[in-house]
Image (cartoon, rainbow, N blue to C red; front, side, top):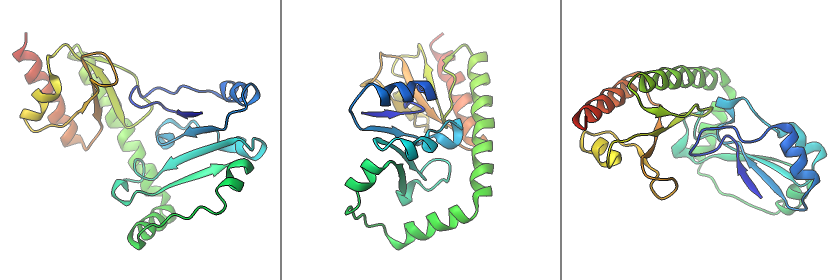
Length: 200
């Protein structure tokens, strides 16, 4: 059983400690909780693996550490997983390993990056709400937006802004917007206003 917490694309935290304990106690399944956005949500169950051999927590350095191109991930796992994966070998380029080590030796950068993203996420959330968009609260580095703009993904693309097309996952009208720099976020907000006004 694999659950992403917080969830993509909603940005919501799905699990609490009681829910995880219930899943562990009432199923024979191996449980993997993907905490790719842990640094933004602050919610983790990694401390539970010591007493839960069938639990594994997976994380990535793509998001909070800004190392998406390095493709570095890791797991905190109980003994069932550790035994099964003991012979597993993964190759990473030296550049990826060097970047990951440097990032881990300088956690202040990650903390500052996360704080900046959270502040920008809340600013964009407020701005979109003021413009009348329906924006879901998020504990990640992105926002889920429901818009009445027809074919919003194409409209944004035409003016040079890429948003995630969720038409194959959710009902029509939903887009996912990653939080960028303040300048990138301002460009998105301005584009949203421009596109919305064109359809009013």
